[in-house]
Image (cartoon, rainbow, N blue to C red):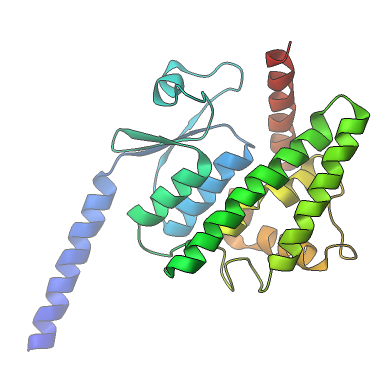
Length: 239
């Protein structure tokens, strides 16, 4: 008799939780093809969080986005119940702390700190160098950036111990690292092969073949359009 009552209570609580989740206002302001926006979309999909997507045009951002993110004036901007959050890694942490199901960060404090470290390393050392390797005008600067990128990738190659950086399932670092194989695919920039970075190469295939990633990832044409628009925007701002 007691277990029947407990079961009924659980169903009521679950129902209340589902109703509360459905009443939440969740929006994502982004641009199709942006790797930083894709990071957030993957996290939301893994968590099963429903949200409204608002498309922003690079070079002609809405007043709403500028109001939400007056410091950087960039996508993505995540809005939860009217409260805006910017910067993709910060958004990922907020999502993981707000919706507990399917965690993307480890629960162990040390492992969590390592995940934060490597995700920042990816943005500081890999993403920045990749941009320079493609968009710098000076050939010597591009070559220097390429050398820096390859050095950074070697650190990631050594760090990758399992199927994913997060173990057997996609985690925080994997989502942060999506920029690397995306750059290789869209910019046709050969970052790694099965010979020079075998673990990263295998990881990239596993990552892109993951059903959630495969569903979220825009087409190559959409990604290329974003990179082109981003390059034009950077060129205009440097004039």
